[in-house]
Image (cartoon, rainbow, N blue to C red; front, top):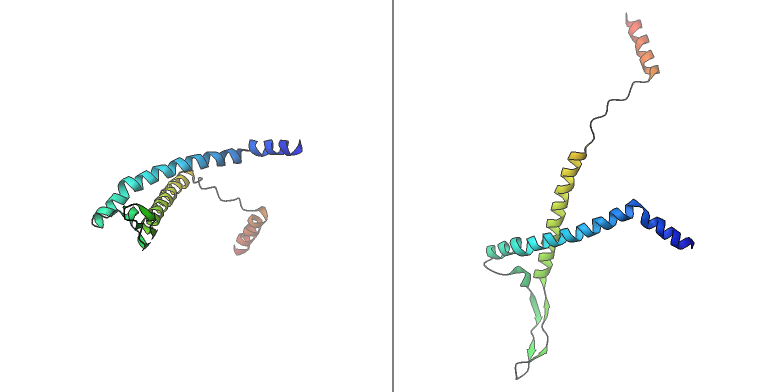
Length: 135
């Protein structure tokens, strides 16, 4: 029973629940950014590149082989660098939005400037002695 009670204590901690909520929200946020990239950014990049759909870009190593009936015998072997570029753009946009969000959050949460610490009594006393000696 010791392991079960330890597990219950572990799950009951606020940090684990916060982490779970963060993961779920992060996954949903990732879908939003992927939709943004797929629906807005990549078509714009395709427009700038002359109508080429960048996510379909690939370098064919071996073309697909067909038989006499037109049926595919061997699949095409290709390096799909377009999908990688699209995923990289997804990542960069997610990182940028998270950075901007955290920057704004930290600006709002910034604590008020604390009052300077009080000068210790021995320093105050030494200053008074110094000032009285100057007179």
